[in-house]
Amino acid sequence: MDKTMMGDGAVSEGVFDRARLFWLSVMALFTAAAGLALRGAIAGGLKTEWIDPVAPLQAGELIAGALGAAFLGFAITLFVTSALLDQIGMKRMLLGSGLCFIVGTAAIALAGTIASGMTIYWIVWFGMLVSGIGWGLCEAAINPLTAQIYPEEATHRLNVLHAWFPGGIIIGGLLGFFLGDALPWQAIIGLTIIPAIITVAMAATTRFPPPLRAQSGVSFGEMMGEVFRRPSFFIWFGAMFLTAASELAPGQWIDVALTNRVGMRGILLLVYVNALMFVFRHFAGRLANKISNPGLLWLSSLLAMIGLYMLSLAQSPAAAIAASTVWGLGVCVMWPTMLASVAERYPRGGSWAMGLVGSAGALASYVVLPRLGAMYDEAKISFAGGADAYAALVGEAKLAVEDLAASASFQRLAILPLILLVVFGIVILRERGKTRAQLAGEAA
Image 1 (tube, one colour):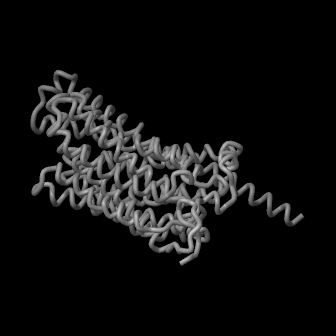
Image 2 (cartoon, rainbow, N blue to C red):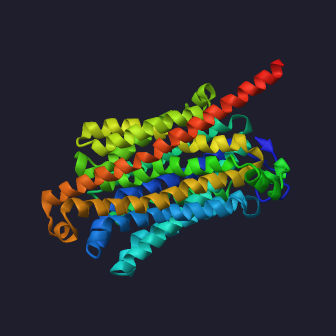
Image 3 (cartoon, one colour):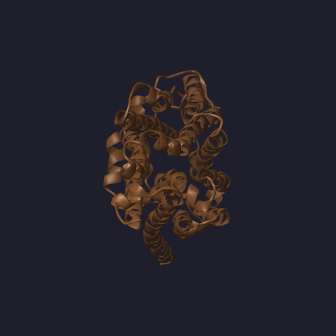
């Protein structure tokens, strides 16, 4: 324990407990992840019950757009609140995060009881957006908080913290799978409210360290200057867009697109991949110390590219598991390692720098998910021979066309980590060049 000030800046004789703050961060992130998994798990049921009857030809794009709304809320919230972290306070952000998950989840689950037709869809979309706002408030607080209370081991602690993101997806995914036949999907998505209430209770009773800028002495203007005066930051911003799209977009799409094609529920593949993430994120910090953050990210991009291409070809449970293993090992450390890389390279950027790259990651999924759905819709109509021909398909013939469309969508996704291979390769070469120049200068 360390004596310090309260989270809103007022001097206090009390103490803050690093372990309690860390586990509060874990619970908040677990809530966001469990909600993400449960939304993915119920997407098929939601699509079948509410979207297919009113918009069958655009159903893929519409459900992907609704799922993507959570990432839009995440991106905007993270962008705005990371700059205002000290003014709002970490405690208020985490309280707001839990409340948003409660309200957003309730809107999704109750939409069908208060509306009809396409109005239901827009209420669901709104619920997804509010849930994304809760996720953004969570990430805006917990990442700088963890870096602040563990400055000596930021990469390791951020990876351990974000191991609980796949942990939440595992629990949420398994609940979605095993309760799918016993409960309506509305009840399943409602399970998100339980950890959200725990997050609110913990945040309300936890003391926080002083505002980050008050502790570091870096003004808001200096924090912004750290970002805008160093153009290299925007390379990391763009890379975060692509790494998140390689991880999060396929994760939300996998149950909708692959369940029929590979002969097993896609949500189980997502659970399996996140089990890999949960384990390997505990060791990522040590691995990064051996091969550097850019080296780890380059290797991750290579595996992600191969894995996504393998997913596009998978037609059996065994092939799907093999492909998911390669893809999962690729994406498992991308998000926390990107955050740690920015924290280490742009230390005076503080919560603003971390929030910017986080918002880039969230925005990626908002942009990519609807495009994935649109590509899927375009492909299924093309493979069927036209909109009328697709509308006339039933049974196995319809599933065959949708399977081909799913394959095409994953093949196009594999392009994203291919671009990252080039980006991180250039970063590695530049940093090696700088190191050699420094050594030569010291030798001279």
